[in-house]
Amino acid sequence: MVELPNVWLNRLKAAPTVWVALSGGVDSMTLLHWASQLELANLKAIHINHNIQSSSDAWAQFCVDQARKLNVVCTVRSVQLTDTDSLETAARMARYEVFETLLSKGDILLQGHHANDQAETLLFRMLRSSSWRSLRAIPETRTVGEGSLYRPWLKTAREQIEQYAADHRIDYVTDPSNQDDSIDRNYLRHRVLRPLIRRWPHVIERFSMLASDAQTHLSAQSDLAAFWLDANVQSDRFGDWMSFKDLASLVPESRAVVIAHWLQRNGGQALPSLQPLYSDPASLSSSKWIAKLDSLELYADQSRLRLETPVIRRAVDAPVMFKGQQLACLGELAVERFHPLGRAHSQRVKKLLLEWQIPARYRYKVPVLRSSDQIVFIDQHWAEGIELDECDSCPIWPNG
Image (cartoon, rainbow, N blue to C red; front, side, top):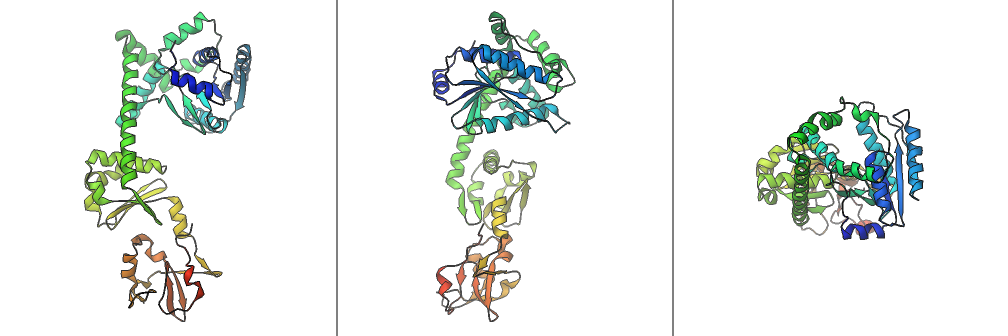
């Protein structure tokens, strides 16, 4: 079997708890046996009962009994699936919801995914997506809840795992649905990969190397994009923005990567509608170009590309209160004049809003305070000549 790198062996021994995701199948049962040989004082198992099969409860008890034979405590969590269109997807989502709540800070979850799983996932994603990012397939490690997930066998072939199970006489259960070729993943396993392996015996290894290389390049790309974003994305009270000039300095492919990572940082994803941004961002700087992406919006604000998030949206829309009074919004008053405190003369409100760099899409929401039919306060600015003690404590907008 795989020889565990010292860095991971040390991490496992130092972790508060090392969990083994135990389904009862040959992969996870073998993983539990293998992990039990590492002499970890903090080893536990977790079984998710999806309540799909009639024998689900029996499988859960089997996992508990087999773990006990290895002096490992197995926790069982029962879930109910609601998405009947895709049981596989619903089951996966339910599992990870449990994992995220289960893992405490520093905990590590071991999963038994192997090289054949990697090959199946690689083919599956390639068939469903035209993006080269689909090549990354299954990551070896990632964050789950407050802990992390680690797949030590991701480059190990299924045959090696089955041989280990036979050598150590490991008991396991077989899910009858694994033989159902109407399920896409099973079809790939039985009808596609098996003939490929017979024709090209090293195909699993090749797929594993391809996925590993893709992960490496994507990680490097992610690091470079993060470095660029940290250097070029700026923030103000209306959220994050970058200049179209900085964005235009990148080649189109790099723009796509940078924007994708910017959106991912905020819980969104890039869509085909962003193509104008990748092609010629400078041409958008003077437009009202907007792209809606789930709960996020990208929009042009003079020479800037801004990202509006739900948090900023709520902050802008929240009423501004002052001395128990809700301030009115500027609305169509931009044609009026206003004399800011400390200025020699008054100016048109529209010009002041430009000077204060308030995005055009928010200007009609700017809070104002009137007294005797005169504007005495706009945004964060008091009027000249107003004798108010409150001048030192302006209402904050956006106020969240």
